[in-house]
Length: 347
Image 1: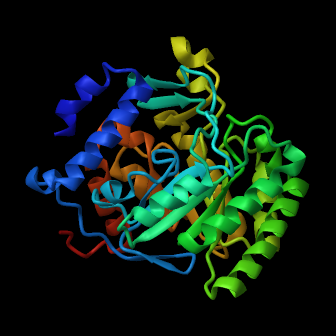
Image 2 (image 1 turned 120 degrees about the vertical axis):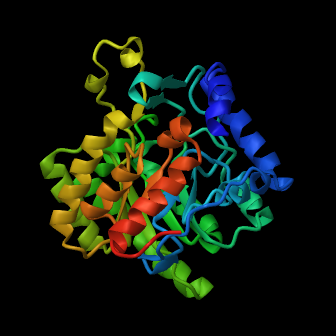
């Protein structure tokens, strides 16, 4: 079904197509059309991640549903977990249009959205209206107008409000589309930020009577020394998980493509090898002491399975969905289940 719709969607502006697709999916879910069309998510293998139990290892990456407005519809596609956001304390429009570009030949996307969202309060209202009772991650960031030296204030504000509603919370310090944000990945800056957030996590755990895991999302553009430093800080601060990786600012893989000069983060197939490398290096430094979620460049089941073999406990997808549709979810669920249980037949 998606293959039929894709041709029409790719004739639309990329951001308009994004909103149209989510709205159409939401309507289809509400009237039960997905079931009528024969959509049947694959049965995966349960996975333990950060103390949480996932029905399968394939999650939705942050960015697709920034405001948590389509959680129920997206969950019906068969994800093992959903991550919404990135959300900031205050609503913000993001960067000027156009800011989203498709590169079909490379199965890639360039975006410079700039954390466009309706703010943490609006996100929480949407979550409260949702009927979803599965594993829900909330991805938090800082407002563009907040000076980088005050970034912790924004993360703390989001953490406190998101905590009662999240299964886990992700600290996004790796988007290339908010000025200076990636400076927070520096060893000293990262240690200070995560230490502050971990202290708040402990306070909130006592207040709410439940512990919500805290993960950090990093970039694929880190050097070997930076990857090692991230791993060391993660161990020192006892962060609960690492998501590897966000989009890349390196567009050399695009060659002379007309869009290669566009500012923003590149995702999809061209980021696969860089993402794999960061994931593998982290796994070697961490020795299984901190769980990893692999994301970046997953366009088929084999890509998802490779993330697991490189050291991830679970994966997330986003850009591949734009090119493959819901069939990618089913394919990745089955591929990941084969890694976990190579001799078990899949339904």
